[in-house]
Image (tube, rainbow, N blue to C red; front, top):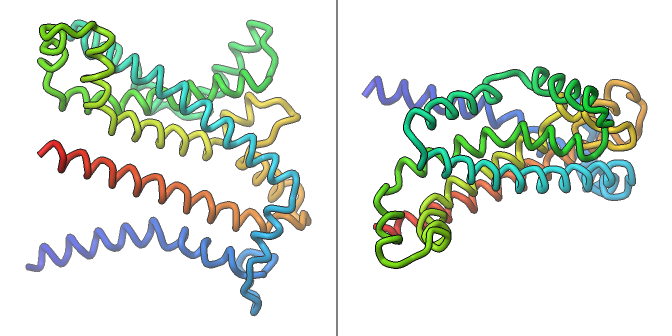
Length: 265
């Protein structure tokens, strides 16, 4: 009994440390205070109105969303294709490339950012939106790969061969049998890629042109270089919206996965 209470207490403590600051941010987004740490007596939607009336913030949001969706889509396609190809290759080849793919995951973002920036410089490839997109794909690809591989391992390895024996072409067997079986992993990888892209600052800073700002770079520049900027409080509302969207996506993915498990049983 004591062990159960202790385990539950630790879990709730960890959850509290993770989510109380974020929930506080959401609550604080409805407070009219212009400074963090100072509460105002006014509670309204003024920060949200400020958010949607500031052209620079809206431009940063559009750029960030377009970059996140584009990089997540490309990373999901490449990561899924790579995971499937390596899974059905020789075991030794799979192990080697699986280890190689893990290196960017454990490596610091600064290493990836400097490496890509140096490569672009050597190839006389200027810092453009294309270089920024490449950087985010390199960042997200390994995480998609690691999300898809476990689903492939859970899948019955004989399903694909059974589809071929029943007359399906390799392409039809892939899209009718393999892809539906690993779809939860693909969706999880896609959502993770979007989250990583939305949150990235280091790679974006090294690879973006001076004419482009994402949410992370705009927020940093606003706080670090222009503390008097009147649009800074609106970033609290923006953070609350991003958090709410991520929660919705995670819940939807969880419900879809549970529904498929029940149908499978």
